[in-house]
Structure formats: C-alpha cells, structure tokens
Amino acid sequence: MSNRDSKVFRISAEVTDTVDPDLLQQALSKVFEQNLLYHSVLRRGFFWYYLEESDLKPKVEPDTNTPCRPLYFFDRRNLLFRVMYWKKRVSLEVFHVLSDGTGAMWFFQDLITEYLSLKHPDLKDEDVEVSTYIHDQSSEDSFERHFRRKDQLNFSKAAQSALRGVTMVGAKAKNFLFPAVENEPKPSRKVYRYKGTYTSDYRPRVVELEMPVKDILKKAKAMNVSLTVYLTAVFMESIRKAEPNFQGNETMAVSVPVNLRQFFPSDSARNFFAVTRLEYKYKKNGDNSLEAISQELKNQLDPQLEKETLETWLSQLIQYEYHPLSRIILRPIKDLALKFANYMNNRKLTFAISNLGLVSFPYLVDQMIHQVYFHTIAVRPQFCAISHNDVLTITFTSPFIETDIYRHYVRFLSDENIPVTMTVNKVTEEELGGRYDA
Image 1 (tube, rainbow, N blue to C red):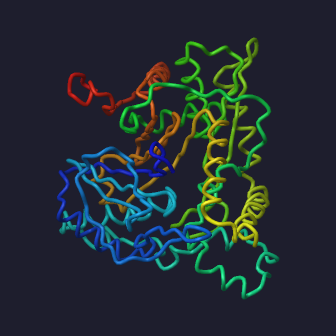
Image 2: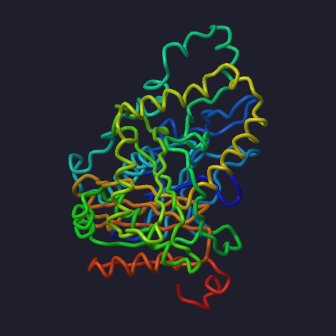
Image 3: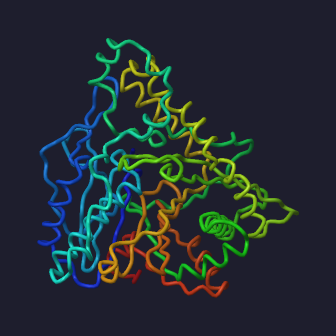
C-alpha cells in the first residue's frame, strides 16, 4: 500500500429512506459479533504481518471524507473496515488484507438486511432471514485447504512451532501480497499506460454508471462472450479514443480477478481469489473491431479459468509462502522486495477490472434497496461492475482528474441504444469549491 494506493475497496447500497444512524449502529453491532474475522487488527512481526483479534468496537460515521482512504496504520490498532452513511446510502469499506469482494459482500448483505429489519419492524422473520452464510467457517484459510501440497507439511514440528507466532495469521491475500506472481503469459512487448493529471489530495475520481442489465447482456451474448469480456473490450476502445497520441500498434493489458469459490468449495470470508492477466495488441492495418478484441480476450481467458490450470498454478504459488527460507527472511526485507514487485507489476498493466456479478437480498428487503455499487481505490484507470435486480452499475475509479475515457464509454453505450445514467464526484479545487457542478 501507499498514499495513493490504500488497498481499500467500497461496497454501497442506496435504500428507499434516509438512513437512521442509530439503527444502523444497532445493526452493525449485531452483525459484527457474528463475524469474528472482522474483529481483527493487523500487526507487524519480525518475519511477517499477522492478524490479531481485538476488543475494538466499530462505530458508524457520516460519509464526508475521501472515499477508500487508508484503514491500516502501522503505529495504530485499527479495525480493518468502516461503515458509513450519507442520506439514503450505506457504505462498507474494507482493507483488502481482511477480505475480498465476495467475503465483504456477505458481511454487507447481513448488515443491510439487519438494518432494514430494524427500520421496518413489521417485516416477518421468515421474510428477512439473515445468516444464510456459514459464519463459523468464515475464518478458514481456503488457500491452505485446497492448494497446500502434502509434502509442504513435512518440515519439523519444532520449526512450525518457532514460526507460528510470526507468520501471517489468516490474511492470506496471495495475489495482494505477491502481485508479481500471476496466472499469465509473460508479456513480450511494452504495455501502453494511460497518463493523466493526478488529483491533489489522493482523492480518486469516481464515475458511476447505471444501465439495464438485460440490454448490455444482449450485446455480450451477440458476440458470444461474457459480460466481463465485453465490458473490458469497450474500456480498451474508450482508452484508445481518449488518447490523442495513440499510434495504433500499442498493447493494452488488463488485470482480472477470479473468484476461486466458483471452482473450489469454500465458505471462507477471507481472501480467496486469483488474478489473471489479458492483453490485446492493436494492429495498424488489421481488424481492431470490438468483436475482434472481445474474441481475443475470450480466447486468452477461457483456458486460464479451467480448474486444473488454476490448481496447478496456485499450488506452485503457495510454495512461496510456506518455503522455510521465505518464512525466516525478515519482514523489512520482504517489504522492500514486495514493493519492487508491485512497482514492476504496475508497469505491465494498462488498467484493471473487477466484476462481483449479481447480488441479491431477501425478497422484501430487496424491494427497499434502490441500487448497489462497488468500487476500489485506483493507481490506474479501472472499473468495477455489480448488478442488482435489473440494473447493472459500473463504477470507474482513477487517480487522474480527466474524464475523457468515461465520456467515450458512455457515448459508445448510448450509440448502442443502451440508456445510461452517470454520476461524477468532485476532485479538483474548483469542483470542490463549488464553482463547477460535477
């Protein structure tokens, strides 16, 4: 993490009535007690970071600060999440060491369901049944369960005992802590990187789009690709059109997270995802249509999503963590090595995406939720997608003030007869001062 990259992501829901902070606090207190993982604070040991259970209690707060601001500070004992409210919106922000998007969504679903049950006491218990997820298993390390080979268990009990107190307890965010190790072909060419004007206070530029999910799904199906691939191809084209200096033969690369719960059974709320990488090289005199880009991305992604491929790759990845040598290297040395690995990884990416897919709540609760949103902090242009009921929301985040990419994205969707509603936050001094209506 850094000042610009807090490794924090946000999930939000807009409800039908103005949020009652007292009831939200009651709901948070109850759901917090059911989720022991969220009691954790992050500590620094001699050899690694580890999670430690704390007696801290979360307090809801008004959402008046910069989104996705840091949650972890090495000199403080902080909970690794926060809950905020503003008008009709409730937001959960989570430090990525604690959980991934899917695990955080389980917590958020319980929180919103509990809050709306308190807000509308006339709802029957069977209509708002909470805890459809298995909280007792929410702290399981699913990486170790599925990918740690038997021969890795055979180093001495004495060594295990000596290392137990200083190795990472729980927060096995493999792809977060080992960003250079990805399921990807090695790039053979220089990757195009979008450059813009940084915001002055590390505030990300956030652009929210809402559109009918069925309309855009129809477009993806017509090309025989997934929604994620289709949205990614549109984003590549939007970057190309927004960049006046684009030569026509550059390579764009994108980071795509994969929810491993789709392939390996897990009820863990901890990080259990992988990151794959796709790229497309534009051709000066070739076919660069949206269909061509989409098919190329699909052809790269599909083989990487085979269970056997993931299992082989992740079994190799986990060896880095459990190798006796890597466990005894001092943490400050690991920090430097991983900082360099993160820097090199960022250099071979143009943008990043994340799609949480379709989310739902108990039926009557669902009727009281207008929409659900999801986004993360950004060190490069990126987007996050999530759908609820019949609406897809796409949230763009960027460390830059420019919005040209998003204008082209909206223009493309409009040309495809997809109705889009757009909201943009304020990031420049002029915008924050109220002189421009963003």
